[in-house]
Amino acid sequence: MNKRVEFPVLPFDKQLLSLVVPLFNERPMLPLFFDRVLPVLATLNLRWEVVLVDDGSDDRSAQYIRNVIDRTPGVRLVKLSRNFGKEAAMTAGLEHARGDAVIVLDADLQDPPEQIPAMVECWQSGVDVVLMQRRSRAGETAFKRWSAHLFYRLLNRTSRTNIPVDTGDFRLMSRKAVNALLGLKERNRYMKGLFAWIGMPTQVIQYDREPRVAGETKWDYPGLVGLALEGLTSFSISPLRWATVIGLMAATMGAVFGLWIVVKAIMLGDATSGYPSLVAIISFLGGIQLMSVGIVGEYVGKTYIESKQRPVYLTEEVFESREGLRQQAS
Ligand code: UDP
Ligand code: MG
Image (cartoon, rainbow, N blue to C red; front, side):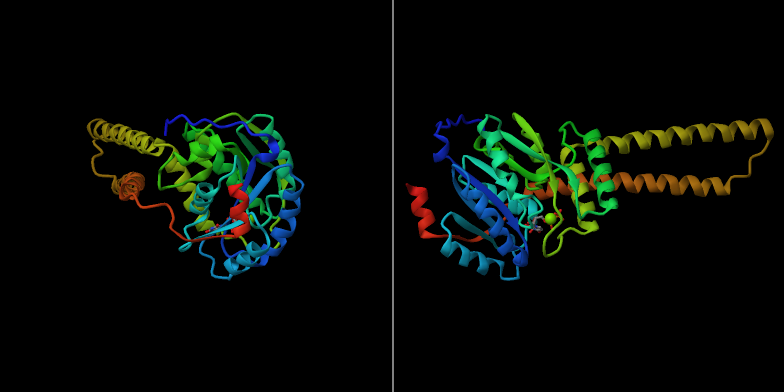
């Protein structure tokens, strides 16, 4: 990890830009995607490649992409063996990208490809990370926006890694940043957290997030809650501390209450009442205990998953045109 890597300084037009595009069942989006992305790439004074990661789609997305590859040098398809989730698909794409800079882009065109030249310009001016921050989120419900806001506040309160608000996975990273990211070997890949963890000189560009053009979102609320829990427990252990603090508070309250009962019995001779309060206290403590065990379990489970050392994803096949290979070699 701490190996020193030298990066040759190339003239801009010789540098390679990689687009990493995770996709899962995006067949209706694909023609639109290429129609909008390829013209933008053609305007750049750079060599480019598009690394599409098929995250186990079952809607013939891969077939369509293979046809595109036959016509378009520079497009590559990494087909995963099943659906591993967006975080794993992005990791796969980053590992397969060869560029001097890498841009992660959703296949549903919610991240406008027209922003790419501005991102490249920022990178060429010397920053390692160009973060795309949403100015607006068209096509998202008020509840989703509110819950996202709440989650980021909670996350940033609890962990030392500061995860910028309103940024998604849409970003440009220099080769240095990508290598740093790939050096993080954990299996629980909460990418937004990992992206933030590496730090590096960063510039923020604001943009308007567009609504999805076709197909539908792959996230439902249970999925988002899972991702949120993943994020919270991957980047801090403060929930464990909360459990301790809440336990301490409950114990103190119990002790005070116990004293009060003794005092009351001695001074007022009132020793019998208390069945309702007993039930309340038992269920209160029972709840706290179960919650604490759950929090501990969350971390134990994480440790268990990490300890198995399974790969983050499995590649089934990689498709690339001969033309593309020849271009890379030159
Ligand atoms: N995606 C993926 N694997 C999954 C789910 C989603 O590769 O298991 C891709 C999806 O095809 C899209 C991107 O991740 O390119 C973002 O997904 P989506 O648009 O559903 O999420 P949202 O924009 O609603 O957050
Ligand atoms: Mg989307």
